[in-house]
Image (tube, rainbow, N blue to C red; front, side, top):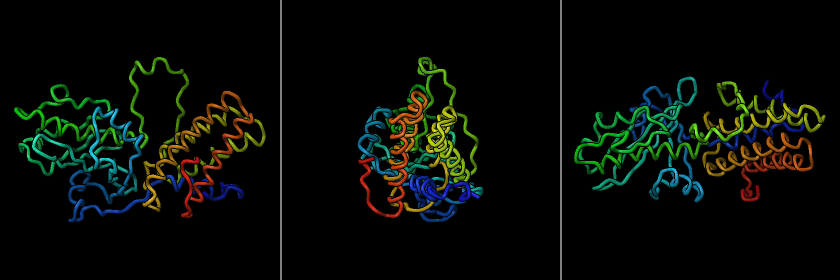
Length: 325
């Protein structure tokens, strides 16, 4: 049914761009005894399996994360390795990051689990040279339920362990770092404050239907793709084309929420492609909303098709210059 919706001249192209922008999994069965199986189980005991997602941070991403974090990342943080728990229904449950921080007496080794709403579900401390209290349930449970808008500030929303304030601050950095990195890498927008919302346009956000799996997401994207194609073919339906372009940009950001297909070694390229594709579609939507069909918007649409075709080439294993996009 999915392939029947695709016109012959475009068959496979959009499917490929949707595929190549997704990272490939390395499966770790839940309930295994070797690292990190037992530790992952302790965080998400209901997961059927875990998908391993590796990311190499660009200099720009590092700078952005450090700005939001208010401090420097460790060298080890430049290539984070995330684990995505997958349910029996093949849906992601959240993510886990094994993260180290520097304490007063050495490295503190631990992990943080987030749910799909971006809230902390568990913080664990494994190895350390601090007081045992930093690994206690009493101290760690205060992080549960906190999200990107919480301060994680000892003495404010976090109660320090008596006489061990610096160690407490180090542990509080673990969930904060995990949240900042996750939002930056997986394109989850940080909620705006009331003050930030005021000067913005009164335009209503695009409403997206709930999507059960990747196949359904691809089907929706294909439908919107051809709304835009028809607009350029017939010169009618500008409002619908604008909405479809905005929906495509939004759908692109949802791709990483689903269990990905193949090619695990191309993570960095896929992340960059996904960001560029979404950004290009957003700019294109703004342009056709403002100017309709012009030489400029035709060129933008051609560039989007070019990106699709370049991604097709990349999927086949041939090298391309990502900087030329």
